[in-house]
Amino acid sequence: MGKFLVSHTLPSPATMEDAAAIGKASKAAHTLDAYWVSSWAALNEQGKILKIICEWDAKDAQSIRRVCDKIPNLPVDGIWPMAKVDGETYR
Image (cartoon, rainbow, N blue to C red; front, side, top):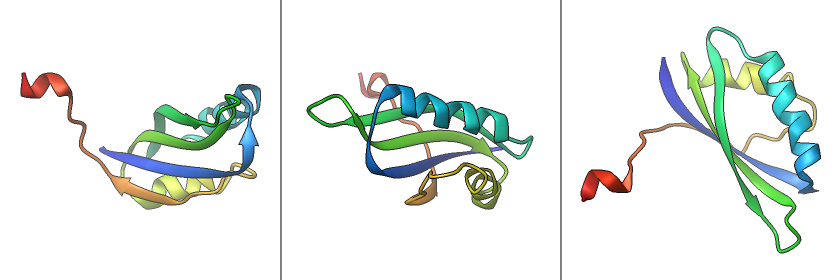
């Protein structure tokens, strides 16, 4: 399995409760070939979500795309292979 980043710019700012529904749908739709690991949310001044960046474990980008296509109203800006780098690496 590879690691991937998936970017989602929401069509309008969303509350954390709205995002929870997206998270539940993502967990329900994952497969053995594509599994959602975690996410980061970019917030506006009111604390609503503008963009979500998700980490996935997957066989390939197309496997993630198939899962995301099952989730209503979840745009996909892009899917990219990723490598994680921590600041502690450079101490």
